[in-house]
Length: 332
Image (cartoon, rainbow, N blue to C red; front, side, top):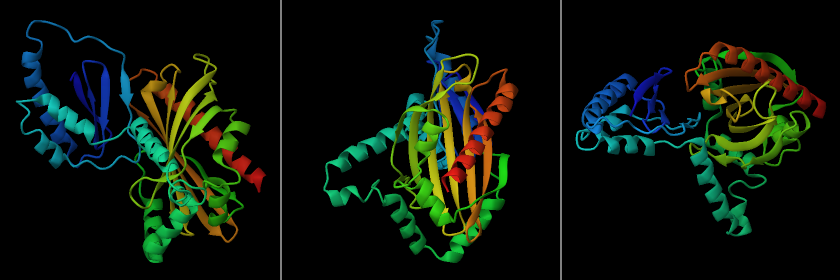
């Protein structure tokens, strides 16, 4: 380990001497974990390079966390580290095993989809089928009291979103009900899926996506998009590789929350940050909803161009969502 750094209020980043970065999320007592890791690393380093050898430099790889990472208890983590004097590597490995990156999540889901394809037709329609995304939330709403969902939605609107602190768009009205919007634009069987907007308006290419699937909490659906998008920057290739992980939660007729974590590859400095978006759709009248778009840039590497990246990226993100809203209106 070359360094242990704090990120946000409850996350940490471990940088290894081989050039790899590991980001761990949602610690209850993050500072205690950082102190324990630094002390253990100091002990390990006292004997690691006794002969004056230097660790070889390798290409850096980022393991980015997604918004759907499970919470990690620092108490459990410290228990795993009781025997750190014997093997510090075991502690690092146990931490790495506690979480999955976006690539790993997609691999797991792809394997599940391949297995599912070999089952009967009735089995295939249960997970990821054409009507699955609609039926999933029907079961969710039946299993929870309406008042419970209303309270959860009210709390969601007033709670501060740490990942997306900046409001880009607010109060824009769209002529749809929550039910119609979900089935028309979001569901697996949507008439106007997001892929259509990406091709027609963003000029995206080589789009690959998973179907909506249960993320494991019984209340959230998730999916992943891989595609190439035109690169407006003066440097880099004409088409940039983009990966977006979406989650959606439906709060009965009150509203819908959509969260999106996006990473870009192949463009200078694009490996320094992750884009976070949150979209709230709220039913305001019987035939109209309002949309709010929040945004945040999470920097995973230090760069002297951070302020420039923040300004230019947020401007591009806002334009993309305004274009999407206008496209939605044109579909009505």
